[in-house]
Amino acid sequence: MRRGTTREGPGQDMRQTVNTFHSTRSTTDALTSKQAIRRGLASDGGLFVTDSLGERTVDIDDLAGLDYRSIALRVLSALLPDYTHDELEACVRAAYGDQWADPAITPLRPLGDDYVLELFNGPTSAFKDIALQILPRLMARTAPAGGDPDEQIMILTATSGDTGKAALAGFADAPGTGITVFYPEGKVSQIQQLQMTTQTGSNVHVCAVRGNFDDAQSAVKAIFGDRDLARDLARDSHVTLSSANSINVGRLVPQVVYYFSAYAQLLARHAVSPGDGVEFVVPTGNFGDVLAGYYAKRLGLPVKHLVVASDRNNVLFDFLTTGTYNRKRPFYETTSPSMDILVSSNLERMLYYMSDGDARLVSMLMSDLSRWGAFEVPDELLNRIRGLFGCGWADEHQVDSAIRDCWERNRYVIDPHTACGYFVMRRMPRDPAVPRVLLSTASPFKFPRVVSRALGLDAVGTDFACMDSLAEATGTVPPTALRSLEKAPVRFTDVVAVDGMTEFVRGAAAALV
Image 1 (cartoon, rainbow, N blue to C red):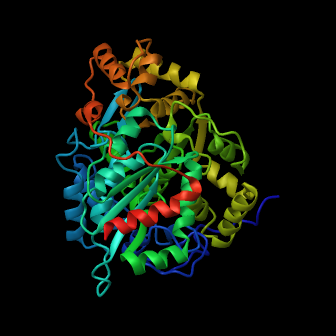
Image 2 (cartoon, rainbow, N blue to C red; image 1 turned 60 degrees about the vertical axis):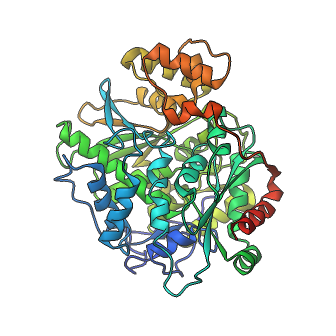
């Protein structure tokens, strides 16, 4: 049975408090963006949102010619208003500097009649770098005046493959912080696992979990909601928990920038004029990557459609086509492991905004998901969502064919996550007047065995042998940070059951003292 009804008139019943953040499930909080970033997750399990989203828009008329830093400063100023201009400028300057392989940060490349936005030129070769290079800088400026001078922030994160390394790289040895990352044992690529288990830094901990990503993510959310644990950590170790997953609004909002950057590059190419619509095709599992495009639209970017591309774990496809979200379904281990997710956390934020801020409805839907493993949205709400969000999915055979087709048509190598988006995009009806931008989320060298096999190359031996053969066959160069993993010493070998994660966190917190 469909829950409730949506409210009439966009934003009519949303809170009018300006520039404050509260849970998607309740409007009782009134936090600044700094407080929301520091806390990570609301006490009722909801995600922080602000009802002022879109009240401050970003001018697009003069975007052409602006560099990434300038665009980032504009966008983040609109989304994080309690940070000063000088604070944001310092964060942006440090986050988007020489650690990027391309000075454009997220360069836009032609891909036949379409475009691909490269989001993988950061230090860990995945799109998560875009947010996780700046989040530690934003976090460092959230300490409250008069607070505990000995307090340390423990970043606690579950990863399906890429977030973990990007968070570790961003927070390693950052003053006043520690970071603990959980990943599903045996369900990330060899390269992804080595990126995490070889991470240097005195304040980092990495642990495998017996289970899948959803198991680890659910346990992390439960740990955030454990008040006894929070009290013990504060008393014994002066530690407060926060998150680097996209459940943290500080992880989400930097991703909005690359949508504006893509539009700026289209303007510079004269592919669009200011105000012309653009379609974005987005590979996503946890919905954060595509939700950032929705935020961009709320800030004034002329986003015509956002197309959600899934792998065989196509829970988002089923939701967007039927209105029913059902996580009680088979879980598949695919060649796109970072999208092997059945509980897409950021969908909750979209439901809040698309229902005109109906926190009660969102709370009921999330309760249904927790109790029964499923929820169903009202028809009116589903129709509104489908007016903006399209969808498609690809199985592993289709991913392989997409990798091969993209190389044969365009001489461009894509990873298996991007290939899900490419497969969906190639089957969409195309409007020649509306440019299409495919978001490329990871370097193909993070998944060299899958890509090599799809291209008909020798895929035996180690991932590093596959990396070398892929480079030779395609005339491309693997990122140094990935190729050097072969000889990097492994530091972390811990494995725990899901019910052992809390004690691991206690130990990691104690080690920070």
